[in-house]
Structures are given as C-alpha cells and as structure tokens.
Image 1 (tube, rainbow, N blue to C red):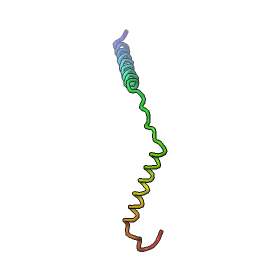
Image 2 (spheres, one colour; image 1 turned 45 degrees about the vertical axis):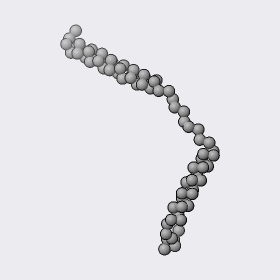
Image 3 (spheres, rainbow, N blue to C red; image 1 turned 90 degrees about the vertical axis):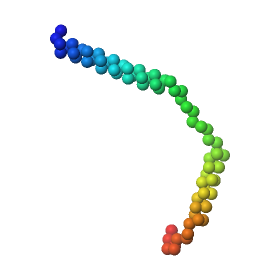
Image 4 (cartoon, one colour; image 1 turned 30 degrees about the vertical axis):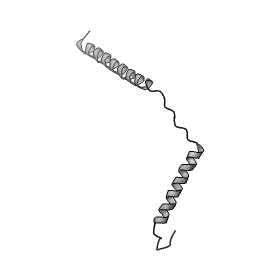
Length: 72
C-alpha cells in the first residue's frame, strides 16, 4: 500500500471518528433535558392582562396634550 493511500485511509478514519463523536454529543445532549411544559393561561388571566393594558393606554392618552391641528 502506498503512503498516500495510507494517509487517505487515516484521514477517513479520523473524519469518521470525529463525525461519530459530534453525533454522540448531539444525541446525548438533547436526550438529557426533558421537554418543558408551557404554562397554562386561564381566560381570566388573559382578561386581567388585557384590562390592565387598556387602563394603561387610557392613562397614557389622558396624559397627552390635545393635538392642535385636530387631525385624526
């Protein structure tokens, strides 16, 4: 076997070993974390957040000076 053929074979083995190592890290890294549940939001919570936001919007509009041009 020639020296070039041996170098190519060693390079292919190193490449395969590297790819196998990366694949193992990806699979083992993802398998360690259990899936997280998304928090459940009740309709009352949604309504409460919407009411607070609407109240803040009304306060902001009341604090503004009236538009002198009168355009809307």
